[in-house]
Image 1 (cartoon, helix red, strand yellow):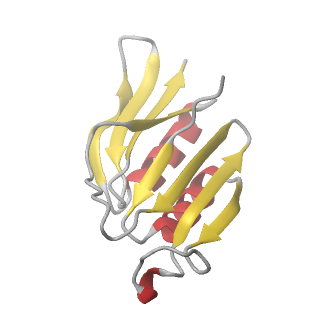
Image 2 (image 1 turned 180 degrees about the horizontal axis):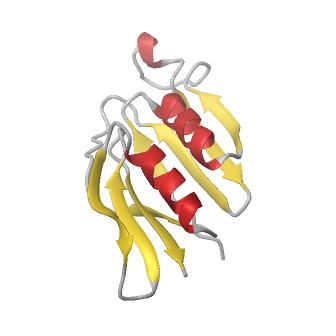
Length: 133
């Protein structure tokens, strides 16, 4: 069994994946636009991503631009969780993800012997960054 996150965006999927790639590394793969699809979608939306994936060392998630008539609500129903190998890497990733977004829980020492922080990025996706000491 394999369970993966599938993120929904309101037309900025490519920008978001480039943003995450710049922070986490990896490659954007399996991209498909709405261009040649025989579905009812506005012409100005045809270049948007109907499917894409970001895959790197230790992570793989999927994403797409939801059709304009599909409700996408930014919220807290799901969070992406990143476990890193050092305090410095936790700071680097947390600061990059939260830039232009919102810090919900500042990066700090925890009762479970870790450095942990929670933020919402500029695209409305919730992230948890954790370094277990």
